[in-house]
Image (cartoon, rainbow, N blue to C red):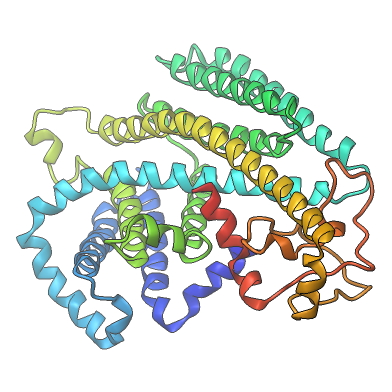
Length: 441
């Protein structure tokens, strides 16, 4: 899996500082969640673990802004910078507070973007596998309609379940609106995708996309629910905290894998002024800032009382709820944007496929194929060659793809590659995934 391979890059020498920050963040997150519970009540220890992480990460981020790569520093230099950072945290305390607010909103955007990108990518990969499966016509329609129907049923069940929470929550309409909005977004994308079916561009991948979007919506609603209930005086259990910890950590790690992996070239192109390590450091800092602001024991140091707030337990709950409502809002908007963009990208790929087929037929009729063969541009494919993934028809050398590799729409049997020929190079294999992502971006 690309996810596992990208995460392994954290073990590389140049990325170990990010691994250190990730482990530090995990320890600080767990400490802030557990040590601030009433039965333990050791918030100062959690603050002592968390606050240096915020200062150190922000300090490294500032360094990366000046186009100085973190990997160019030795480990001893990093430790020295950490010591200096303790003093800078006091001097730039006001600046850090401003950055905290900005980082919380950026964390919302980061997590929404990379989570939906994962849903989109998983849907396309599932559809690609079904495209080359025997009886693809049936399986791809089962993917689309099955995913659509199951997603709507699941959302409906949870929607009616929220009405049972009326006696617990003061504002259950937040959850109701979220479920209804996602259902409307799914129905809109389903209708939009079906329009393309009339021009023989069936977007079966939307079924998997709908399912993953539904599961992520339920996860976000659970976080909002826990934020609202914590404001009523109830406390979450430690197993619930641990479960959310691992789910949040998975989303964070997946976002990191996207920055280190297939999305790195796209990010470098979109943010030419900044390096991917700058974005990676900001992602880690924004996550740390979000959790720090949400779980900070405001009543411990008398901060809340100083500004006239008596019920200090509401502050963290309020920050948590507002942040997750913003996440839900942006998430629903981005669900539609990703869906429309994905449908358009898929249609463009199919047009490229059609154009490639026409060029191949023209080359065969005009003798261009024989010319390419004589120049050694085509390499024979072994008879035992098995096509694990669909061919990349977005390359410029489309005339070098033989007609046998061009699958007719809705093939009901695996492609016959016994006598086919195709030009393959290591560079093509390495850039294949990047090309597809660039088409989407």
